[in-house]
Amino acid sequence: MGNFPERHDMRKEAAYLMENPDEAIRLDIKTDPDAVRRQAQLCGIRAGARVLDAGCGSGKTTAVLHDMIQPGGTIVGVDFAQDRITFAQEKYGGKPGIEFRLMDLREPLDELGQFDFVWMRFVLEYYREGAQDIITTVADSLLPEGILCLLDLDYNCLSHYPIKAEMERILQILVNKMMESYNFDPYVGRKLYAYLYDQAFRDIEVNMIPHHLIYGNLRDSDDFNWIKKVEMASVKARENFEAYPGGYDGFLEDFTAFFHDPRRFTYTPLMICTGKKPEAKRS
Image (tube, rainbow, N blue to C red):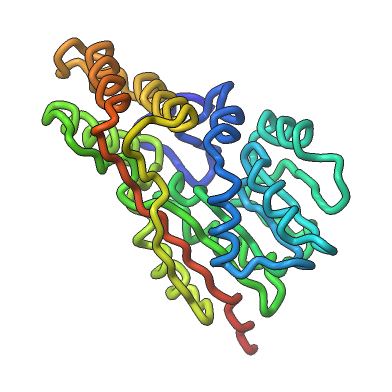
């Protein structure tokens, strides 16, 4: 993990923009169980289902889904980072019907068998290149009438008011840097429908709901999550802060003041796109 050269083969490297020793903790803190339940209901996840949580992170979402599919349901959470799988196993494992496996979604998942639902939340935003290949791979894990659930953000990290012009410019510069160098896609939400359409998924449905909707007093979880994002940006693109008044320290001071102001308004839409597995091609 860590920094990668400007041009490299994204398909082979496990390049993850937010990689750092505290990532499992960040993912755990920022995950809202009530929001996960609402999103899963929109996807049709139900009791008795067999579910694959593709890109399970800390395992918190996996645990919420596990509760929703009882009685009789089973779920497997997979992630390519050993530290996150270890975290998930220690905090959420050890119960009947829930399992965590170290696997890469870009490689075949045949050994896991097939599922009624594949849930993939906040994964494709880290694969501006390679998203379609991942969808093809996980689709093979669906039963013939199985449903793929894609959940991702659109215009990620870019909608704030009121914000200094200098801060707005640097945020756009940072996002562009993440796109070019780390395969990040802040606009993936608007692409999910086309991804499923192009691969001939059936009965596609799309919902759009707010994910970040921050106004008034700041919740501790949002404070932790967003400051971590700023810290990671400083690690990945420190040189881009040179033109900002006061450099990175000046930006962090301004962003913290903005974010802690109860007058501030921040939002990001979440796209929820579902589709049934494509019909098998006849030979």
